[in-house]
Amino acid sequence: MKILVGTDGSNPALKAVKYAARLAGGTRAASVITLVSVHDDTALRHAEHFVGRQAVEDYLRALSDKDLARARRHLDQAGIRHDMVIRTGHVASEIVALATRGKFDLVVVGSKGRSALGDLLVGSVAQRVAALAKVPVLIVK
Image (cartoon, rainbow, N blue to C red; front, side, top):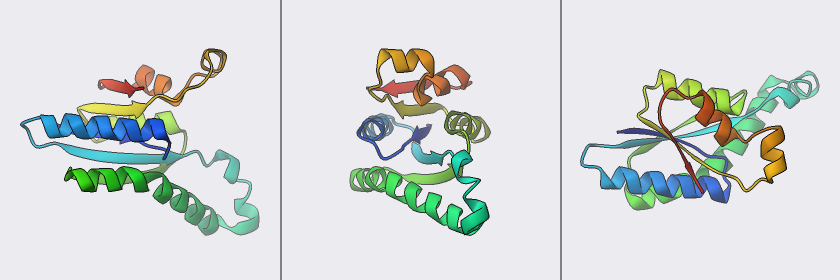
């Protein structure tokens, strides 16, 4: 089973990683987890003119490395085979595109505790992934 787990370094994302690890450990088939960290670089495009593209890429890479650290540590300790992917762009769209291109069996994401009004107005990344994905999506609370 190929499982894609979106992580942003938050506690809800770590819960999603732990749940995916339990799923992977509980299946008889060989399971592989891919962690994905996506940062929206839209706001930083203007900064490129002042600091250069490489500085922006280095900054986003450092953020992603930090976001992935706890998740990787947990999977290493659990002995779960995994890899990681780092992307920039619209977060939900990038996760869905990777899930499709990579032919993943399942996408697992954490649910953040936003207000009902905030979800109604803009929606969460988890909601957008669930709405756009062609593969099953598990939202972990």
